[in-house]
Amino acid sequence: MKRFVLKVVVFLAILESISGFLLARQHYWYADAADRFARAPIRFVFIGSSRVAQAVVGETFSGEMPRAGDIALNLGRGYSTLAEHFFGLGRLAAASPRGLRGTVVFLEAPEGMPDLSTWTDPWFQFEDRSLLLMTMRASDLPAFWSRSAGTFEDKVSISVGQVSSLAGLRGSWRYYARAGWHSLTGRMAGDGEADTDLSEAGGVQIGREKFIAARNFAEALSRQAVQDQSELNSQDVERSILLSLASFLKKEGADFAVFTMPMSSVQKQPFLTEIGRKNRELVAVALKRAGVPLLRVGFPTTDDDFPDLWHLRKSRAREFSCALARAYLASRR
Image (cartoon, rainbow, N blue to C red; front, side, top):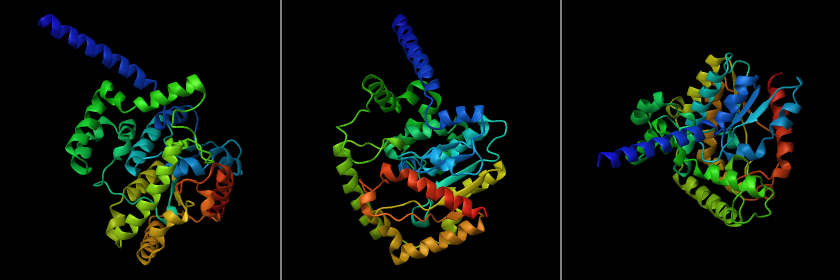
């Protein structure tokens, strides 16, 4: 019996070592960005959802800046939360002796409405809990248990992943499977690419079935959002992670701005109701009070520019990036 237990322990130790080795080399998302921060200053960082990943071309944006050589990183990611981006930016600050000083962080604000989730909302999205493991530190676990919403099972799973490489690797199997398939075939795994004029930036899946499901989900979600919407008050904004992020970046010596993200008419609907209009006005005042500029990017679109009703088509991304750069430069005058 003792020999059997010893074999099990040794086997698990080997698995743990292998998992730790793989995770240490998973230079992905904020881990890759932290490596780049450690080597050279990064001037511009874009955060938010896969909409940001699809719509912003960092090289095009930085190419419009008067100072040559400024580097721009796009860290937009599907199923990411603002809490994850908050923790991720903290990792970037720790990666360089100069922290985030001199960096400009841009966050998407569809129709002028940035993410207003709070620390008592879930810090992760169920569809990809591994993103929280990639950004949160073990020292954040007490606050995670006491403040973040979520089921007991989810919290246990994420907590175990923080202290066990083997458990932490479990949430990354898709990353390794897709990367392995890409290295063998030159194409990412999927159910057959659709002719959508979208890229896989930010984790967007462009298979035919996924594309159809995304359109249906966008329409259903928009209808539900209109039905469920309610008026915000100033306390809702004050409790937001957004303002925590603004305060953190100010202490770091970084600039922070939010920008209007192009949207399909389907996704605009909740923002164009009377309640939506009042909420946008309230948030605009709060942003101004916090010293966070709202960049209103002039960029006319039609629904044909959003193949899956979620993301700007790839062929217009450089055009939008130029428009965003011009809006940013105008705000600095």
